[in-house]
Image (cartoon, rainbow over all chains, first blue to last red):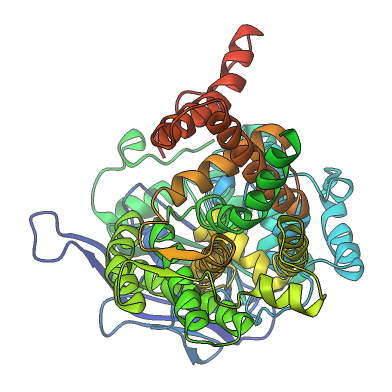
Length: 275
Length: 300
């Protein structure tokens, strides 16, 4: 199924997540997710609010572990119970809000230096030196935003689109096994969103990153990636491979959802945007 | 008279400048409102005073004070990171607890150092001159320069950068593979180490250590940070560290002038409070007068 060799890179086995267990607020956010992601797959995940998309990304990123019995494996290594900061070696993430993925009071180059050492031990060498600065410039210049000439500007002075582009480069510069995109264009204006999306596609293709992208937008879910997953109430309803996805239209997607969920698809009620 | 005011303000600016840098590291860099300071300042003073009074090498005593501060800061941060106790409360608990520890260390409320060999006597002896206020300033300048250079280097290293980033965007730092809990422990340790160092130097320069000499240290540190930032608008680590010393100097200068003008020592707290209000309010009022937009009041 993957674009590269058929090697399972990320394996999710029986992932469940229940919040506020045994209280009146109990919510089953993930209800037995099984998913194999192959090397160089670009999976788009779509689903309504509360479908469990973000919870799933949080489990992969190690923010909290799944319920007992669930397993998260990356490259045949069980990382289920590793602390969050150790997950960073395997997964880079771009958050929904640009301010989440960058540190406002650090300069662009300081942000980049933090990202460069993902998964490595940090020592008493200078965080920024000439060679690294060159590396940052060459990583930022393909964005075409001029950030490479503003390395000593604070991240706080950047616009949302610039900050999100910086976050994207930060998530990918040290080449983690998986790139997690958590509705990373949701807060940007349509034109900027399109630019950031194109940059994402460029970087993913160039670095051959295995990618999981969560989105509310069916059109984007169809246009990007080689696989599509639709989630609903903590379960995977639709899991389509490359061939199926190519022929897919929004109408098909709606129909597939209705079939699988067994309820009438109400656009406004499940908050998926078609445009 | 002006000269004596300046001399005493410079030497106090250098002495308490270490406290200010400590407060800067916790409050501004880590965003960890650490109130341990009032206690760890005295811990530094009492550890050094006890050792010096019992005839130990004053430099060794000063290093021991610094280490005592490192330990105090580590415990405060551990209360927060390991047991999830609120940061403010962790500091308060440590401050209260350290009061008893300090009394135990000193076997009382006060240790005089008048006839003991402090680092200042040591330096004077080494240079074959008598202890004077100028000699104290030179000694402190050397010490301040050493720590300035060390911190200026450390905060730019990979570890130092991760520490700075932890107070800015903790989620991002964990997401990039750095253990923010460790960073907070390290930052609090360094902060209180500096504060305890200041305590030991203050005890040695004034010739005694008193269990109550830490009261109001946190307020002084915050005031000095705010004054330094307000006056110099520093950008970059070296300038920020420098601003901490300048802020402390100005703070002590105002206090000294106020005392010389005939105000009672009891009035000092009110002067400090007024000073901080002025430094914080003036930029806001100026902006309002220019018709600039100012964001709503922050509560944390």
